[in-house]
Length: 145
Length: 86
Image (cartoon, rainbow over all chains, first blue to last red; front, side, top):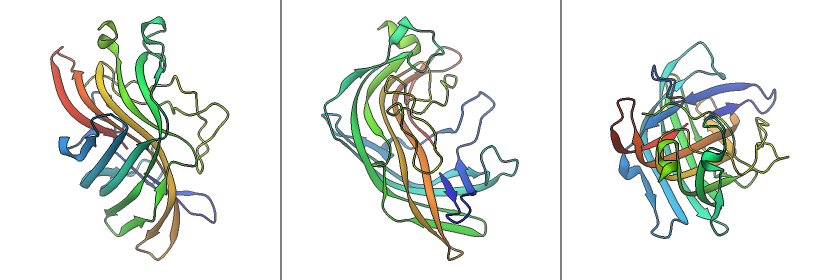
């Protein structure tokens, strides 16, 4: 979650999940009930409250303080799922080393955050200016299934 | 949790995220940041504005990914869980 000064374009906030000793990168476990998927897999929602994150202020910034965010997001498919990825036919380190059935989507919602001395609340956020998708996938040892 | 799969941004080639300007690397780019994973993933680059407690308005961009399913940890055991990339 990155905030930028609209005048200078400079990044002023960088909230992320940190990097753990086991190399887990900006990724954190969240409550299982925070993420809901419709039976047909075409709609999903994320509802997070007081999710702990790290504030680094800038990308990989040396300073780190505790922060929390709330998120209310909704993914809605805008097309039918299609097969993505190249599975085990590419190197395991390739970004295409997966098999998925993803539907392009529109994601909308709001995020708020709080840290020592600062808080923020967004208006309506959207993925419309770039890209969103959702669907089932597998990688690594599960490519043999 | 399985090792990190990498930080690649799925999206149509020739397009860029609206504020940071990260290029989309194509649609055969995995959104999950977890290896040895099978489950359901949702990905979005979100953009908009945020009001700060300092009275200022900021531009916001977020690369958000949610992964729910089965994964393999370093000792080889399988687990179920939900994770998010922030």
